[in-house]
Length: 386
Image (cartoon, rainbow, N blue to C red; front, top):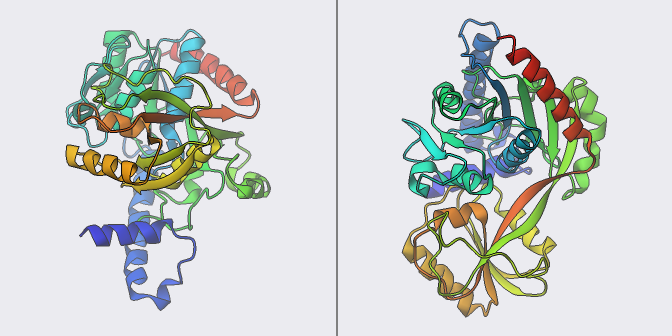
């Protein structure tokens, strides 16, 4: 089963896949993609035509999402927008589904803005990472975003709630829909799941209020999008940003990581902590290759890397194997992502220092901040009339 899943992932991420007519296996995947696309189109139309009603919260709602499955930077973007909303004086809360967390079904408060209240297993990795990164901003998980939003309003007086990965969550009305696309491969290989990475066809861009092209500093292809902006984006505001890697902290060799909120990695001794160091990296994110790019941009020399599937669930034996491999490769330190660090909390110590790397959104100009400020003022005036 794992080999089949890995094969499907390889096909979905590949650009150089022959036409389905020459490969029976691809014909099957293409057929499933067509059926999946049809279901998504019907679902979208039912909400668009109001045949399926969407719920409305009494506060402003900002959705951050994408067309492709994973890897465009939704969580860093959620972090960025939440900080901007709070900085401008709006009481802000983040709503996440809490994918694969124990609280996904029934919901709950991951952070009240002062303390982290859930374990990684309960909250899920991305909500817990946001909770640790956003002091003063509550983070709530649950499949039912309307119920989570009501909790944010009733308990925390939220004026703005941000839906992390909310573009396809049509059950809840929103005041601002921000759609993220990879600057180099906005539509992957052009196919819907499972033949490609698209959750919806590019025509779904019509629902977005603005488009954010991410990773534009990492690819030579980003300039090619200039000619397609007007065609694909229908005159919508388009903003470009880069994923800026940053060392979030260092956990000394021999220390047990976490639990998150306790025994967190210490502050890095300097921005050049990875420069010319031999590092062994491990990660379980949607784009493991982008993590290796981040290490290179921070000056590290990767002597080995173990990649896992997104949201991979580590166990102590995995950490032991990773530590042994790092020592065998004569690495100076180990490196992982902030998202992975959340998932190894409370496990065994590692034999080498563990450097934790995160990414932040870096916009090329102040255009997006100006746009967001204007949209927040518009949302506030509309909400006051509800």
